[in-house]
Image (cartoon, rainbow, N blue to C red; front, side):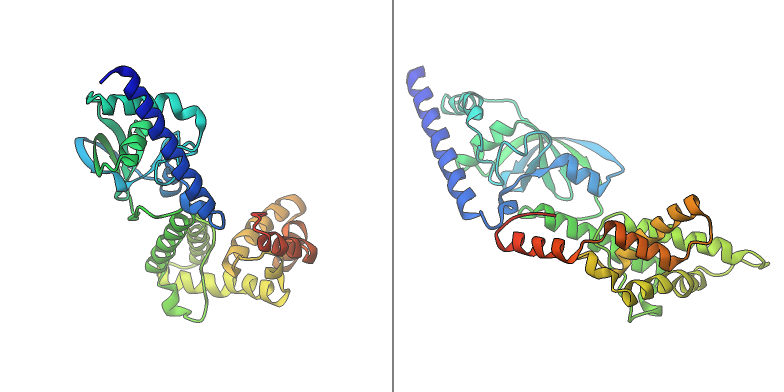
Length: 305
């Protein structure tokens, strides 16, 4: 077959792929995140892998490729092209496929059991649009504490990390065994490390004046009674959570403590925890009108934060 035939076929393949992408975008209008590729940099920043290793050339299931290092906005979750400017490169790859030209392996990162394209986004897109189930790739693997799955959205990933951090915090402190009635869940990743730091600082000062170091379990209980609980009670009694929709008492605890330290550095140690909590609410809390506007925005399908 001549070159013109391959060009025509590849162009038609691209048109079909763009048409499928447009339909999927319409069907997912109420939940657009469902059709978004994951950003490798964003995922790596959240999961913070400590090590990586080269795993060499492998044959990888295309359905396990869920994101991209740099082109995650150019393709949807099914690796269908989202932009017209992708046509030239996409069709050249498809022409090579139609001509039985063997292309070099793509390059992937593996993280949590799924894969992210380092190089070869167009080759993945063409292969997937033509129904290929696997592709050859050079793989770099990064260590992971969390298992990911192909249909995971950004929100799913964020929640999985929060759940992991929460369970890890409970395992380290056994705090739910001591205070089962309290809920220590947070809505922001990385905050449990701050709480652990608070506990260790409290333990350090609690040890002053004792010949023997107090057990960590006692430090946890003392921190709860003397640091966490008083601030949590202020948050509850003053109704401060109303200004932070979707947040928890533990979220407010972390933010109020940080704000309290800032105020004490600026105005002196006489600033009370209650003054710090109220001050934080007045500066950062949403008013009733702002909360109402958010509610209306959600009803209308907006994404106002």
